[in-house]
Amino acid sequence: MSDPANPAASPSNPSNPSKLIFAPTGGSTDPSKAIQYAQGTLKLTDLSPSPLTQFHAWFAAAQAANVYQPETVTLATASLPDGHVSARVVFMKELDARGFVVYSNWDTSRKARDVRGNPRAALTFWWREVERQVRVEGIVERLTDAESQVYFDTRIRGSRIGAWASAQSSVLQGREELEERVKGVEKKFEGQDKIPVPPFWGGLRVVPEVVEFWQGRESRLHDRFRYMREGKEGAWKIERLSP
Ligand SMILES: Cc1cc2nc3c(=O)[nH]c(=O)nc-3n(C[C@H](O)[C@H](O)[C@H](O)COP(=O)(O)O)c2cc1C
Image (cartoon, rainbow, N blue to C red; front, side, top):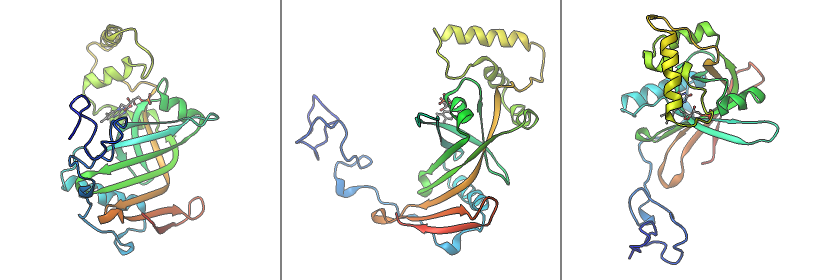
């Protein structure tokens, strides 16, 4: 029986109610019913020689499977020299022959601070509907203002104003402070259709050094393949990893 005073204490763990969550299995209270991944398999012969081409194919498959916003990705960065790691969800807005591009504030945000001192990042995609994960690790580089402007122009006006108005991740005294800043920016660009991309905002490309493709399998015996560069600009080596 579950404890009505502590609804999170699961019946599978009556002896230790101090664990607010214990072995959740996706809705079921029976650990033997843990969700199994069985939608697909992955073999070396399925893979493209280039991880970017492979990613493109998997992204298209995720779209075809109606994955909700498959561009949603966790971006992890780390500050030096203290080694503190931070991660947040962002949108991958572009994939090109060099890598994965995300857009953000590169002045006040935590990720901005991290990559200034340590130009490396990791991206993790999880596409539940196809039971696939992709992990990317690499070096980051800023896009030019001209490149960022192309994407900036596609954003609705409110989002373009917002990029100017928000000193992302700085402390606000209240919502009004942000709204005042928005008003100020609206006034500045009044009657102006074309808004320049803020110099502190734009694209960041993660140029991959390591990319892993993960396909869920039954009993957690998943298929995993890791691409690594042989030398700096060399061919990609592909290895199967133990789950
Ligand atoms: C679904 C989703 C998408 C997001 N997309 C972006 C994005 O593309 N760019 C961005 O700067 N923040 C995005 N955010 C907000 C970030 O998660 C985060 O709050 C912000 O970038 C500040 O993080 P930082 O101070 O760690 O750099 C998104 C959040 C969510 C939940």
